[in-house]
Length: 190
Image 1 (spheres, rainbow, N blue to C red):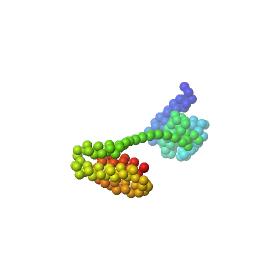
Image 2: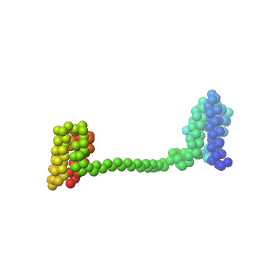
Image 3: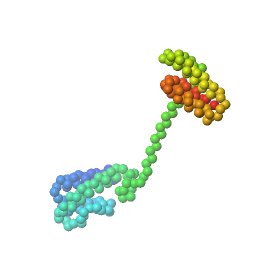
Image 4: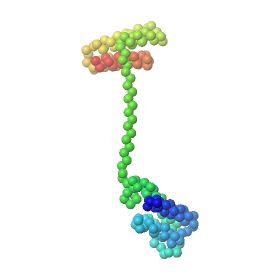
């Protein structure tokens, strides 16, 4: 059995002893001194935080029950420290190790609407839910976009014209917007 296994076994045994002592109404000094004493050699500060730790053997003190609770907690922490030595350093204080967790998740959704003006015109003609007047209106707007694509105006001027077209197209619904917006963007970029 390795040293660490023996140490863990001893700590677990002492945690059980603490649990048994806590069931009593009092703890005799000798019981408690024996429990704490074995850890003082390896951990000289083990008795820090205990109330009236030094007391004559055989006497009883109400502080001893509280000291058993404190000792039990220290032993439980020591058990965790032994099981996870990389998490602790500097006499039982949690280390300042930095843990870096890198999670990279890249989603790229690219939709290419490579419709020509002729494709858009054909699509307008095929829309059975559009009336003749709406179709004429859309085809007229499509001709304006076509002219904007050919235009030599600067981008600011094209943008001013495009904003009005966007307002018109958005009122016509998603299907129309999906067809027309790529054409407008092509016009602004050229």
